Length: 94
Image (cartoon, rainbow, N blue to C red; front, side):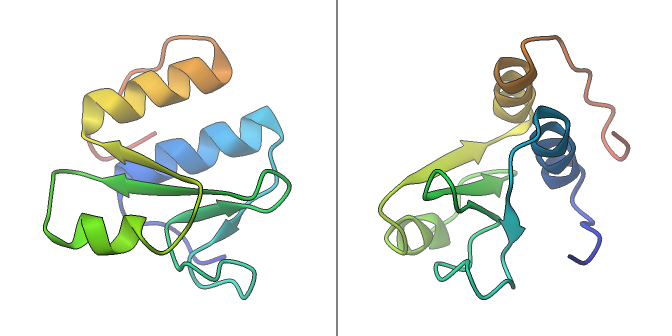
């Protein structure tokens, strides 16, 4: 998997790894919806957005089970829920 440049995606990726959840990135053959993350064991996609865009509706239609996480606060909350601890977001670094 290539390194992620988006700091919010890096936070989600780190939390998924820390939690021990198997996932693949958007360019992996198993990720047929081509969203940011696919968790094969759960048949679940995750799409991370900094802000709303017209493209989000098209992306959500690609998969049946999609979690859309929009904005830094939502990313922080999702990571906290996933890890059951508080996480600070500093913009460019995990």
